[in-house]
Amino acid sequence: MVKRVLLAVNSRARRGRKLRERAAAAIRARGHEIVEIAKEIPPSELSAAIRAHKDDVDVVVVGGGDGTLLSAIDGLVETKLPLVILPLGTFNELARTLGVPGDPVPAAALIDEGVPVQLDVGRVNGVRYLNEASIGLSTRVTRLQTGEVKRRLGMLAIPVTTLRALRWARPMHLEIESDDGSKRIMRALQLTVANSYRFGGVVDNPEASLDDGLLWLYSIDVHAWWHTLGILLAVAVRRFPHAPDTTAVRGRRFVVRSVHGRRHHVYADGESVARLPAEFTIENRAITVLVPPGAAENIR
Image (cartoon, rainbow, N blue to C red; front, side, top):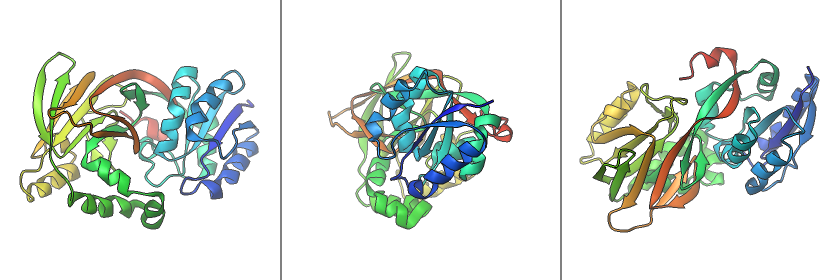
């Protein structure tokens, strides 16, 4: 069956320019028609372009990293069009979680052979995200991960920029309001509200899910440097929610405020999207993604 494909590739992604034409050729080789968005479209206009083509296409193929997916998410949620991810960024967090191949040929095959899975979508102050939203240490890490650093270091950009950021890390004093109305005060170097069970390149929480309608809030406050070893060990054995100096809470809604009124930056999927105070909510099974048949069985 011939399908009409909307192909949007971020040519500024780490491998975007090189693989854009290969992706188009792989899709056409399968007999499909391409409605192609201009390669230099600003990310802010990607969702609008998807909405404009909602009656013209059967599937959307987005090539880029997690930031490119963030730009497309509103259009995908609102049109209900299925998504094929062509991972072209440095980290490709969601694609790795879903087992999506990085080569354009097998990625294009998902148009025909992919299994549809419905995933939750997080929101922070109304801005949608797929993986996680963070405040604190990781926001400084993200700012240090410039395009040049990611191109030069690849995955090594994570530990290198984290070590640099630790020199300037200062604890935050935060008020956390949960969906039951309860409030607690937390001292944290890092606070993350995750939609996905896998994030940060290494964290995997076996108690979490991408389709259960719940968020997980993690607060980390390292009281002594050697406690970092305990956190790393907990990550290695997939017990991050139970790591020392870590508080983990799950719920459908959280409101995070600074006790001292500081307007800390909130980053979602690597992009600056808001400042405190911030409300985090969840949209259950709001987006459809086509994934490899074998990978679909392992997605939770």
